[in-house]
Image (cartoon, rainbow, N blue to C red):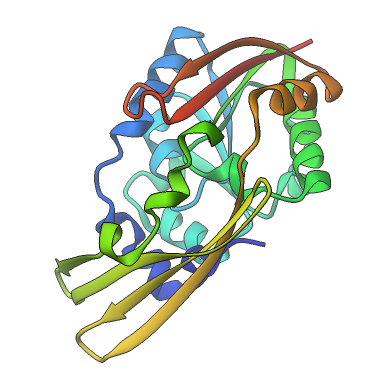
Length: 241
């Protein structure tokens, strides 16, 4: 199930406005173009930033996400008719033969349950043409990113057009082995509305990810630093075996 910040219409509507810098998507765009991909499946497409970025370059893109409010935002964006939007997880996909499957940002980690993760990898494998590629990122557990997930380090206030000031921050709730649970709080000054969204991410070690990929029919080609977050995130590139 998607987190509240992606399912709640008001939070979905301001998500991109609060974090407008999506430079993290550019290396994925460059990878897609470098691989010569023509058809792409974007799992966890959210509000559609990456799917539309690829569509801007003429790629045929399918975006799938279980958060209906986020997909509704995507469908209202300029050029949205160039992307096929699907509500649901990989089990909702029609038969596909794409060149590349992507999971950007926190998508791979947000699929925390082991069976859901295996199902997602199987769905990605089934959607790819023979020899197609899968790319996704995950935070390196060694960097212990959760140690800075507190109000003092994350508190911000952003004044948004037609919305007003939005105050938000994150609080760490629990660390249970590889599972890290935290809560975002959003305060809307215009009407005093307070909304929260709890999330659990799974911090997978590199050997675990490699084993999961192999078990679902992939061959790991490369593990690299995220260019905008060196030393903190790992980007996995695999090919359908």
